Length: 397
Ligand SMILES: Cc1ncc(COP(=O)(O)O)c(C=O)c1O
Image (cartoon, rainbow, N blue to C red; front, top):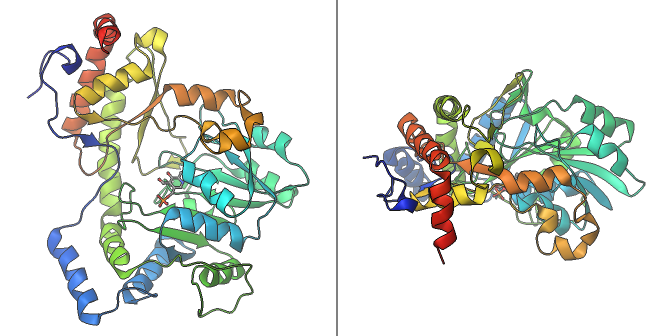
C-alpha cells in the first residue's frame, strides 16, 4: 500500500524488503533441480563438461561467432587481453565498473583513462584520438546500460593505428546496433553472466570472437594445463566455467528474450512517468540500438530537481529501494589508481559530472510495471517536497 508521505518525512516505507537493481532472474526450481540431478548423476562437476559444451554451442549460435565460457567477466577480460597480445598501455574509460580497469592492471597493462561522450556514456573516436601514442597497443571499449552506440569511427581508428579493439560487453548480452550483435564489435567481446545480468550463470563469463586464432589462444589460456588446442600462449590461468554455472545459464538463455521484453515494458513505464520532471535527464538508447533494457539510468540536475542525486538516493533508500550510484566515483578516482595515476585528476570533465549525477533504479525479474509506477511516484513526490526533504536531511546526524 502506497503512502502519501515520503518515509524520510515520517511516512511508512514503500517496501519492507530492499528492492535491488539487476536482472536477478531465477528459473523455476524444478528445472534447476533437474540440472543438478544430472550433474550429480554424471559426477561431472567441472573441466569442460557436457553442460558447458552445450552452452558454448547454444551461445555460438545465439551470438553468431565462437563463444568460449569462463568463470566470470573479469577473468574473461584478463584472458582476452592476453589472447590479443596486449601490453604497454591501453585506452579505457574511467566511467565503468572497476573490474574493467582491474583486468587491465592484472594483465600488467597501464590504463590510459579516456573521457566519455556526455550523451552516449561511452568513449568516442574524438576523445580517443589524442591519447594514441607509441606505447598504446589497444582500446578497451565499454558498452553500458544494456545498449550499444555506433562504434564505426572507433573501429576505423583502431584499424588505422593497428590497435586491437577489445569490447567490454558485460552489460550488453542480447543487444545489437543496426542489427549487428554486441559480439561482433572489435576483435573480441566479453560478457558477464553475473546473477544481476540479463543472462544469469550465478557467476560466469563469455569470450566471443570470430577470429579462430584468438579463440585457440583463449581456450588454451583459460585452462591451467592440458587443453584441446596447442596455441603458443604467454601464460595460463584457471578460468573454467563449472557445470553448475552452465546449467543455470542454459535455463536463463531460454528466457532471455522474454526478460528483455519485460524489461522494456518497465523501462518505458519509468520513461513515461519521469521524463517531464524538471531536472531529470533519462539515458536514451540510440535509435539504431536494440538493447536488453536491464538498466534504467538517469541524471539529476540538482538546481532544477531541487535535490542532489545523493539526497534523492537517501530518500529512495529510506523507502526500501536500493537504487545505485553507477558509477561513482570514476575509476581514476578510486584506489589504487588515484595514487598510481594522479595525472588524471580533473582531466575527465564528462566522467566527473556523470559520476556526480547518475542513478540506477531497480528493473528486472524482481520488478513489474507496478514497481516502476510506485518508484516513479516517490521520485515525483521527492521533487514536489524537495524543500521539506532538504530541511529534514539537514537536521539528520
Ligand atoms: C562493465 C563491467 N565490466 C566488467 C564486469 C565484471 O564482470 P563479472 O562480475 O562477471 O566479473 C562488470 C560486472 O558487473 C561490469 O559491469
